[in-house]
Amino acid sequence: MGSSRPHVPEVLVTRSPAPPPGFPARPARPGPVRRGGAVPDPTVPGPAAPGPAAPGPAAPAPVRSGPGRPGPVGDAAPAAGLPRPEEVHVLVLGLDGITAAAALHLLRCGVLSLNVNDPGPVTETDLGTGAYSRGDLGRPREAALRGRLRAQDPRCAPVSGPELFPGPLLPGCLVLRGGVHDAGGRTLRPDPGDVAAPEHPLLSVHSVPGAVVRWPVVAWAHRPCPDCLRATLAAVPRAGTGRREQVLAAWARPAFGAAVAARLAAEALAVALPSLDGGRPLPGGGGPGRAEVLRPPFPAGSEPLAIDRRSCLCGLGQDLPGARG
Ligand SMILES: [Zn+2]
Image (cartoon, rainbow, N blue to C red; front, side, top):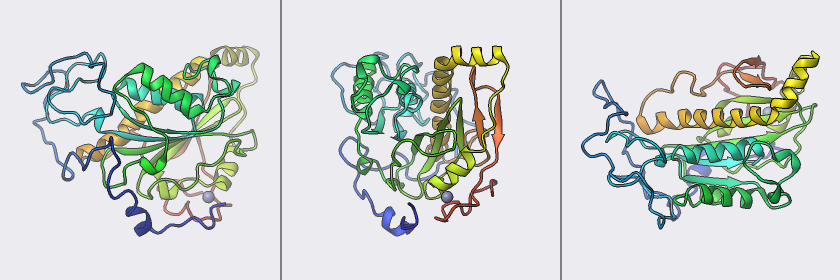
């Protein structure tokens, strides 16, 4: 696949000329705004800080924040003038247990605009991170997750449909993609297809047996194709063979998945923030770089992984910064 994938920016820039209902009519900020040394301390509420801390029960749609809007659950009121998590829009493609849990973490952080997509059924392998329950088995993943998101925060009205996602002109947008692969790197779940705009930043993670591979953040136009994924993921080194290492990894696997999901959510915020704030990418904020392998029991220590795009026929790997195969 992929050889016929269009790579014509004009075609996709014109998609979604008018944001759909529920999304802001236009960017909150007219363009990149430089914030100098006078950045207010986010821990100190400013004079125009929102008042009520508890969300109203009858506010189902994602709404633009403004003075008087409730902030993230349990958070202190943010200082006026700073970007807010409600300005972040995330398109989630592939809802395995990790990416589904990451969506729940993003909502916990105040991201209300969540477009979650995966019509496949919830399976045993999706359980363990807390995103799905046993009662969800067999239900479409996107329907089960939408229910969880709404239950977690009534202000969230999640949708499923990439065509509803804002175009690249709106700041604060990113794509979060999860893939599930076998030990040979072959994709076990359907590819989402070419559903985002070429400019949208993509944060993707790929589960292989015993590990999770985090792909460096790239523009959607430079996302890895199945050939690149297969070649790269097949080279993931085997885990340690010590008996206790293996036992601990098996014991900790659910906690590992949950921790990877939390890390992903924080990285997604770090990817979205600069486009809202007009600044440079945050160091360590998921910018271009190498793929890395995360393993149980905990995703703190990671191993770099060389990206192999030698067999890429679709050309999407061109211009991948800092990671030429
Ligand atoms: Zn490729």
